[in-house]
Image (tube, rainbow, N blue to C red; front, side, top):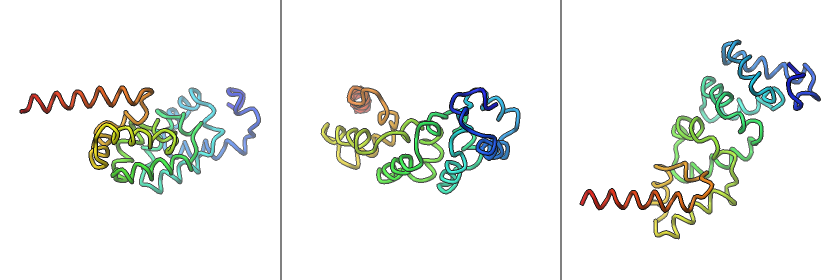
Length: 172
């Protein structure tokens, strides 16, 4: 298994064994094997630290397993510190822990790798520059979290605001 990935070439069995044990404890061994074969570098990251972090905010083992399978980039390239900053930012925008664990983490994990000041706050500022109040900006992002990680968030916001205004006009 260690020979499958350059990231594992410097790892010894004693370093990857805890990760294998953790994964086997939360998922069936055949699924663990398939996932590790697709993403062998998962065995070289501090999975226990990630697992403990997400467990502390209420993520269940099955949800953590889905994160390993569907969003390995967060675990491979992100950091617990960065993810914590993003989650605090989202909570300040009104997201509950339940919403974070059932909406953001499983469906919008890309957000968790972003820089709050450099990438997320400018999106909120842009919404406010477009005339939305702080509460309206929060509600908009709650409805459209994908805007936070859109490559061209300004165009995405304009398109969604146009659609909302058209829907409002149709309801009049």
